[in-house]
Length: 339
Image (cartoon, rainbow, N blue to C red; front, side, top):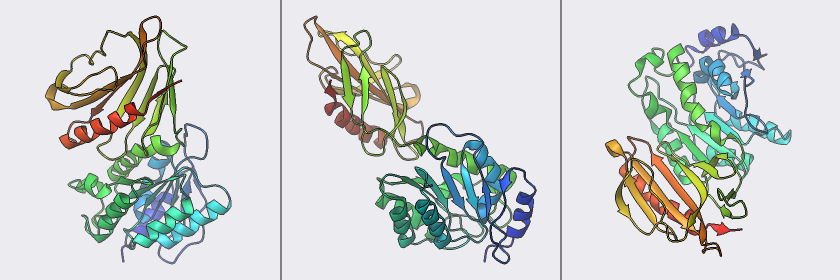
């Protein structure tokens, strides 16, 4: 019912270089179009984006960002599940799979559950909310949002409906299929999940600066993804559109000295810093900064190893997020262990 532009878009895509040959075609829907990532960081298979006709024009944008892409006009969830099942049997399933379907069909809770069964517990599924004919949100987008909440430990949500609201120039007259500007925007939104494409360690071990024999182990909460890990610092990202980054830093400090707050921060609420206390501070313009610290018992030389953590919540995100983040951060710090 939404394939009026599929043939035109498929013809345009066919002229783009570097795409694999199409698979079997469905009448009026064109063939399957695939693309390999032009870059991929990290070990393992690159992240896979699966879509319908609304993804076709964005295919080269997505491959430039680092996705492997498989798009097919008129595609619905059963076809996507069959594709993932074939990859699973061939041991070719990547750690991160993005599914952007529903514009050319419907989405059910059973579709999501079946997809998660195929992926297994060790992989991350990203669901993209589909726009309705003419633009806007509908029952499919609502179901995708609900599924992401229900399976929060394994599903990441990209709310394309919300992100694209008010951007008429991103779409063809049907409100679904992309223009070139829309294709670029779509790829930018999907690129947000690229840090999740590599399996994450369940523990981070940091060595305290200036005292290499002092080491601290922390366990990030479920779905906190490690972005970078060095000798003295580790950076994690929390899930969600209004997620935030937390930087953990291991240092040594005299036992009598507290942990200094970051420069430019003013105290909003504070407890004991060294020894497991947490603080909530505020930067200029009200952007919340969450932090805390944990310390080992004093060593014979009078020093302690201090694990400090701070995270900035993006401007525009609800202030309640900062308070929830403070509680989560305190949980992580309480679970820290010296080695």
